[in-house]
Image (cartoon, rainbow, N blue to C red):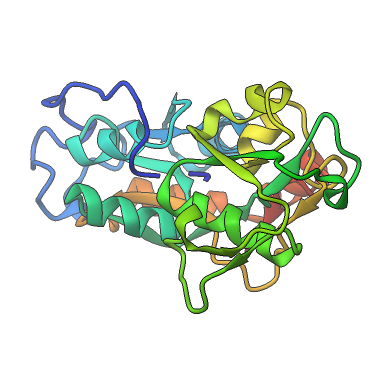
Length: 278
């Protein structure tokens, strides 16, 4: 997160009740929820939806968990759906994004303790360049347009010598914070999901790992530059509306998502494009 506050998205209508909440409401003690009710989780398709599908197909039944997965292709609707009670949890985002989303939207979504699952390295991709040094004067680079991932993309470009950012700027950096741009790079801000499709129209694009995977791009093999996993704050986790952290179904899914079986599935399936974070 995958996962970015000012993105055009189709937001689900308010008013639907979360599965398992009809008796007690979204603000009640989640420990009293029906442990046998289905747990509905919103996720982006790759890799989160695939990881959840592995859990559903191989682990959930034995653990006594009825798991339902709803896939979305944007970074707004999964949080809106959790906040409005249309799903029980989501799995698509990292903490800087969630913090920014809560701040800008007045939501109260929180990470589930012990449910940090994976990292998707952000990468720079191009159809025309073999290395970043080949960027020409006046080149165009596409960036994700949500606050945290745009800053993350700019910091990746800075780490690879393309630009310099204002000293001390945090993870809210924008192109306005670029203080040195020796190649006069033009930045094209796009919804994260659109970035792979933009590669034919720009010189390079900084693409989130999940969308790179959907476009059959590998951060490990195809990226001109990619984030390091060391001390990276952008790990993805299971999240719920505040007060629902102790839902027994949520706790059960958290255990399954951080199991040895899921770790092996991630390592075997994604060849370094997705990295276990537990």
